[in-house]
Image (cartoon, rainbow, N blue to C red; front, side, top):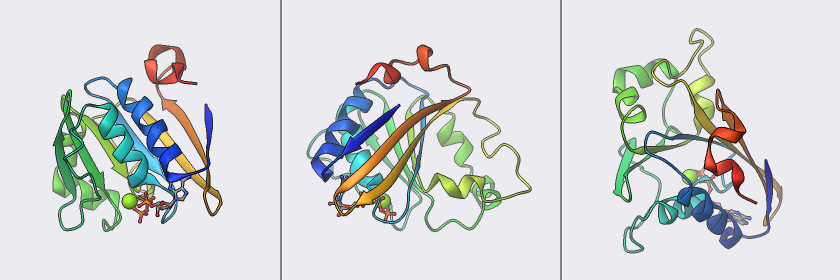
Length: 160
Ligand SMILES: Nc1ncnc2c1ncn2[C@@H]1O[C@H](COP(=O)(O)OP(=O)(O)OP(=O)(O)O)[C@@H](O)[C@H]1O
Ligand SMILES: [Mg+2]
């Protein structure tokens, strides 16, 4: 499914709608170039997951993962600085990703950069991919799709 966003506020509002539909154990992989709006969308998703407004959601810079308290634990992971999927294994991210919280991963491209690794997330069978494409300065095309996840089997795909 595809959405058109014309502003950062639009993207945040979409994120909030997405967040409201998420369930414990969901893994969201975010794809998109620098400045596409992955963090902006994550801020909305966190709101939708019930993370308090006072909690400042921004990309984890020095740590790989930030944790917020919402309806479930929310793990915000940014792989920008990671070298390869193999490095990720060393960091034990699988535990975070396979937990009872919701995991949101920026720069998910990095998970797929290791040709030696066939399934980047061996512990995880299904996830939701969100691709953000910069169309113009303020315009973004945002696509959602399930991986091993029938569109009919997750409430996030009932958004419109
Ligand atoms: N429609 C839009 N949706 C989201 N952000 C937008 C939009 N239009 C303009 N912007 C601007 O684009 C920037 C997006 O920044 P953001 O940090 O969310 O991107 P990012 O994908 O997380 O980047 P990075 O790769 O550095 O982590 C912000 O400055 C935001 O105001
Ligand atoms: Mg970011």
